Image (cartoon, rainbow, N blue to C red):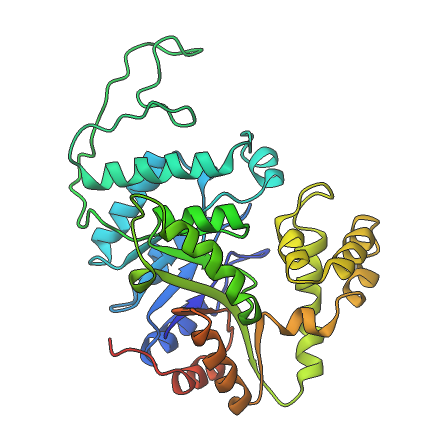
Length: 350
């Protein structure tokens, strides 16, 4: 199993400890470092800035939002970073949710699966640089049709001026639902998982196997990455750690989405926490956030974490690896935890 450091996106300001965390992670054998974006800091700028001080770790976005950039723009950023890092970039993509896509980017959220498929194909065509890039659409038509509203009618197919260092930069997709996960197994090189639970491995594998079995599937289980984001707390005080992360669970389940459509809430409902999800959502939407946090059961928090003493965490890591996870993307924010993980996980030699 490999280790990744998930730095996420910024809160009110930059993450001042990031550079030290990345140095520690590279020193103890971490395979990769990831950044994210929501509606504040972007994914690529911090990754390039901090990545410039690294020499070995892979540099990934987890995730870059589809609606933040046209596919050709994303491909430009990816091929640029791949050159600057000597071929260490991982493209991590996700659709986000309707509240962000329509509220922040001002774009329609409809047909996320079809948009993802078209987006990935265009990115791959840019990186292949075999011919000028065209797309019939309907989501990302290239060139823009001459009869489109406001079009000058002068667009022509282009291919990148810069020759990509790698035509096959790996593309990993963030996915939560069964159809999205199956499509990820079909068209991508890896799956970026949030709120992974080893208990649900059988269900995950059914979704993945459906994608692997499709005609023209890009990968098989043997060469496909499953990268799971996970909070890791090595401690004797489990209760205190659960209380620290309970608000985050309540936020994702109750506040990171609309009452009518919240993919995180749907995920936890599939995990068997439907009653708790309903209570948390009702309280959060009513502005009763303290009560919403209190309504989060201990096991709902603990199931998606690595939590306990060093020996307990080592055993849990074994469960996650046995469940099919190939990369643990830990959200550790202190060097002792990073160093401890370097001793608890049997990482492949660099």
